[in-house]
Length: 130
Image (cartoon, rainbow, N blue to C red; front, side):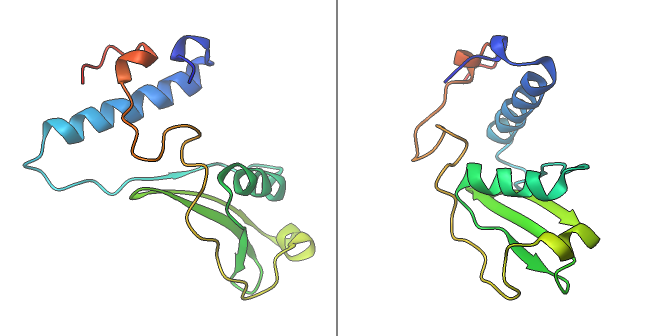
């Protein structure tokens, strides 16, 4: 695993925010757990981004809404990650058969943060104590 020091500032800020949220959850067991989800913006190259997210998570993309929605979802424990493309390009280029089942659980959970291994936020230079 790398450190936040080598990441671009925007990416490092996102990772830092995730660790800060995790620390808040740990510090406040008296409060209900938050529902956490993340969406990867697909932008102009929407179909390609959905495919890239699918490949990086080991999940299969799927179509919905009469093939107007091309998407992928992955689970990182109770956290949901999604990437969605909408519109006419989806209709023309979707490689998924209508009604195809969604994939199973992601095999690439957070890259290397998986399989119940504890992550020390201090190793990322966050200044968050565990």
